Length: 237
Image (cartoon, rainbow, N blue to C red; front, side):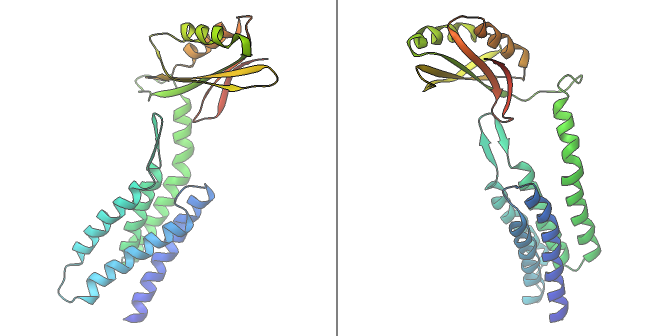
């Protein structure tokens, strides 16, 4: 019996490592060690409930594993501006706990199949999700809110005038200003950065505003970007 239980724990650890390798390769917050420990711990708790206390109900331990792993998953979910990151990592942690519990219950076929499915979902659905995100004009698709960053460079003695110009230019029904700050630039220049919030992504509105700013002779350069993507959308030297 001891050998069989050790084999169960070893299987849970190996499957957790298999899932964690994909997460580590992607440089996610919960990687190789976390997934291995979650899977191993789930198996150990299930074995503890099933064999250490005769007559106890192991399903109660499984339910507590689900609850406990929820707190761990909440720790990797972060809100950055209007976007939320870490949901996929939290879901992977939750699924890895289930894989470990299956291994601990010695449902090894189901455990292996589940681990393969978790890895396959993370590997093969990720490119599909990115492709869908790039399709902005599919009929009936809802667009999440997005934040833009518009940066304008001008002479230091023109900062007040350019600030007023930016306030007038970005004042549209689609855009809402969330921040404005200045930073010293090269020589006597200053960079003014304005954060904008939009209920649904509309690059055309931001590009139009950036173009209007770029046409003003007091502006030396202007560019806009989506901070989460770190992709510059417009620039003028």
